[in-house]
Length: 111
Length: 116
Image (cartoon, rainbow over all chains, first blue to last red; front, side, top):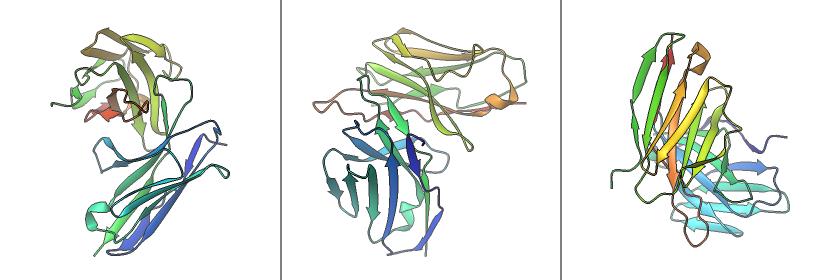
């Protein structure tokens, strides 16, 4: 099993739609999780951190299910500007901030 | 704040040539990471430094790759000799810990390397 697994997509949705991505991880000791966003031909940037059961930031909600070892990202009222690749990120325990990135889920929002 | 700076932004070279990628982390950040991104393999960690000391280089593909961090404000990733399969985008990232031991890594714009 890969350390971090994501559905690559693409998810093609109309503006205003609600879309959800899931991510599974293998290291049960991981305590915190992250979603990064990467625009085409750009660098990844932190979107949200998830430290407990979940986190909400405007239209974005991240949830964590430790028992099943998966993390989800929900985007409500999708905008054209949400089109990007969303990377699920899991730290490696043991310090030094080493991260394992998922392959990413591509989202395309159309008019 | 200038962010993480990488140079060059684009590099096209011929197989067998030496390639040197450069990175300047954000001032005050004490950890630096080198990644490689391809369509097939996604974003892979190559090596990372903490306080200028290499901590984990298990992601370095082979002996043709080497990385150095001579001081807190500069790091290089060198490929010698380069091969076409090294073609990728190479990112440098740096981090400053927070009270949660935050893992927010700040990425540079990347170097797009093409080896012909």
